[in-house]
Image (cartoon, rainbow, N blue to C red; front, side, top):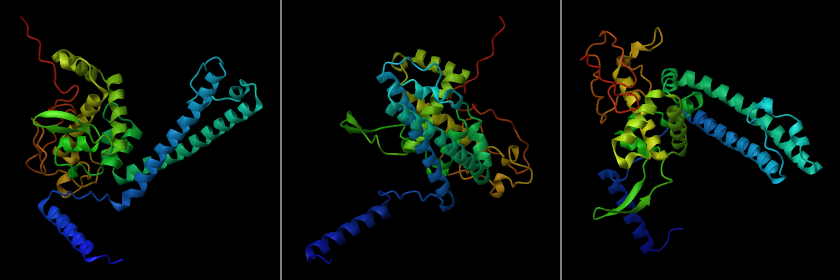
Length: 321
């Protein structure tokens, strides 16, 4: 449909405005995810959907148990050894027994499918980017699944000019409606990557649960000011994200030969993964500089040195009076 001359004129003006925004830089371009990794990323997201559906089946069994005022389950139904045929026999009506048995059979099927997907995803990650995958798993609070999510959802850290851009993309900060220095409200809760927000939420909780330096850092932050006595979940997620970005940035400043496989090229020869590749606009970590020559000796640098992440500040030496 051609339309009236007025419509043609408005369409032409709209195209001119879009072209002007592209030329001026006010209209940012979207990141084109590598074609060879899209299928693996989609499979990882499908695995997350299967896990949620499996959790819904377990929740339905627990709701039925509460609905009929039956005693609570002694063990968690998450584990396969705790799911037996006796669970369905607890209910008196045959229809309810059949419903519970169907849920249990579906849970067992989901376990098999999820295990097969995780095996394939782990093998794919070891082929696509084994060094970055191993580095992510070395961070406290991040296991194989969270490492896979961060690896395939971030892809190349170079596409974020600064850490704050990465935090905004991960849904860890909110936009504000501000006028004359006054905040009128917040916006943009659904903008960004929901998978990264979930991954950082889990990583922050696990890090604070099992990592002693993170616990001490949390205590220091609570004592620092009265406003930070109660750390919100969003602040914990931002701290975990900053820790990971600092670790990734620190890794790119170290020589690739310090952790590469025998026979692989060094990072100066272009052998660095996209997540570790240096990029412009990122400030170097305080106290760390890249080697001046390819044959410079390897200097071991701790993961938490030179940043404000949990466990980054070493304790001062004790003075002997």
